[in-house]
Length: 211
Image (cartoon, rainbow, N blue to C red; front, side, top):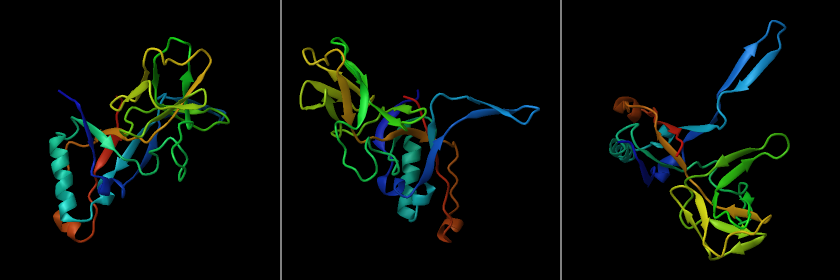
């Protein structure tokens, strides 16, 4: 049975990867030359190639062991996206006011961590399901909370204890670091040692999964 393993892909290899967001758009060109465009997916997903980080035989062996323990594509795991792994802008320290999670109503106890991209035309809100343990900071009504809440690092859900639930109309914000839930995107990890020793980089495709 498929599962998610709460383990991070070897960080030294992940830091030298390539990849980014992917979307699926259907485009129909009309007789007039105009286009009709429709988004097939409501949310984007990330794709990566971890092969760029494999520079030594020991790193390659570590990846093979990691791949085998995940049973290829079967089990998911955590991935560090060097480009996008915090709630704040690049080079800016994480703050409990980085991202708006929602608004209190006196009764709601749970809020999903999320990150919003853009602000002018059609902002995209991305659920964050794999925050880094110990990195989540939460504020209610502009005041950082130091108690009365917890965050499940396997789901990204912030839960307020009884007596600490946000009041009606009060904004709940958070700051955090996060990983991306991914799986291997191949059932065959091809390794060419002759090419590798000559400087070629093996491909290790990864794809984001929904949790």
